[in-house]
Image 1 (cartoon, rainbow, N blue to C red):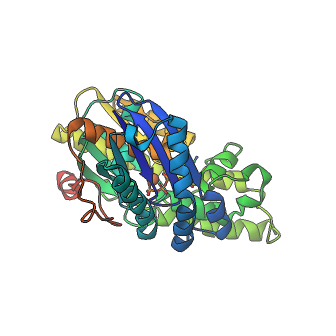
Image 2 (image 1 turned 120 degrees about the horizontal axis):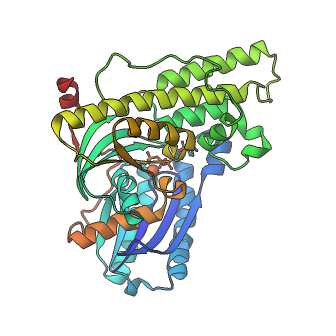
Length: 367
Ligand code: ATP
Ligand code: FE
């Protein structure tokens, strides 16, 4: 079987065709990152307009690369939740139009479930496993028990880690550096941090007293803002220049983010051991745009080693948004015989939709 996947939940227009062995037979992506970095953040109507402008050519390109017509497919998977309403709508409308044209069933996809399960298309990871998603809109820890069965251990209480990376990069004016041309805020910080000292600046530790798996990044984001202002004043930096201590700031910021995530992960391991939610030879899957950061990955690898856990990270291009993960999630549902619908009328978007069943209160109670 072949499934076409369509992704427009945020700022990337993606389409891909995958087969049941996890082969990507056609893939196309139009990223809006450059526009949004220039505008200083995602402006939903602009994201919608760019999706509208590009969706047809992205889908056509994916089909052409796959050398297939709509008639050769078995289903069309499309992200319907969660995400920006204006963006989600463009993808769903286009998918409905294609379904009407071809008579193919649609498979509605939860964007975060797709992030969590992408890795299964390239290597064997059996259920249940622990999953950490850190991205532009989310941070969460969950147990994946089946294709459509998740337990949510903890989630972000305020800003996402991606937002903390993006705003810090912006405050540092990293887009003015030639080497950061075209990079997302997170990727720019990772690049600069390579030449910095992670212990150069102390960051406040957040939520160290709370025995849960929730995340908070507004504290590190605010601390970074104050630190950059202080450094610019101390070093008398001109308004359009990047402060000379930027590598140390980036490295220290990354260290603070890693430290917070590592503590939450440790907490999740404890809870899962207590409740036998995971098998003895357990696996952690780490995905999402922020999780493509190799410094974070190597830090999380250490936490996994201490907990006899196997760490699995999809390659970075599969961590950020793309059509492939949507197509693959559709394929897994198709193979299970679930998820397909011909009822185009009632199928709608759900901009807010948590991943799975929330058991964060049980995590706190178990402490
Ligand atoms: P969500 O999936 O939560 O709806 P999203 O899909 O928009 O959000 P992703 O595409 O997964 O998010 O990730 C984008 C975010 O990842 C951006 O905030 C970007 O700065 C960040 N990011 C990308 N590369 C890196 C990196 N190497 N280090 C840290 N952050 C990164
Ligand atoms: Fe995403």
